[in-house]
Image (tube, rainbow, N blue to C red; front, side):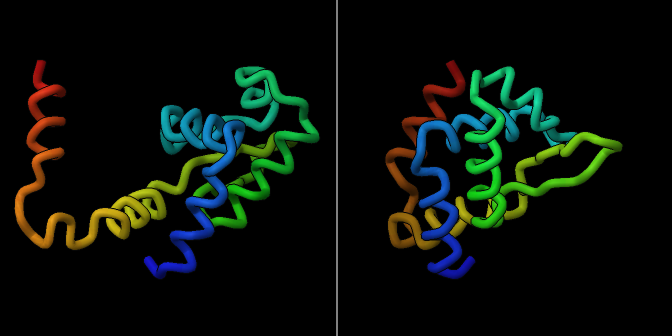
Length: 109
């Protein structure tokens, strides 16, 4: 991932509603969620949700498809993994990170 793409993705996620939408889509899996269902689950007005979804799409971390009359939104898992890879590239200069060890211990409990 290029730095400009990472900045766009991080910028899109740097808003409470957009972060909530993205997390909901990640949890939903590749089948995605209809726009109306996203609005209901998060309590967002449709006009506001449309704006936030457009921002996430423009950043390349959410995709949209039409299913009949519904617009279905999905997290772009490849873009998400690319962003995580960009953020952790050359982590700890190749050495094992203490944070990784600590989080692995916490997750195993």
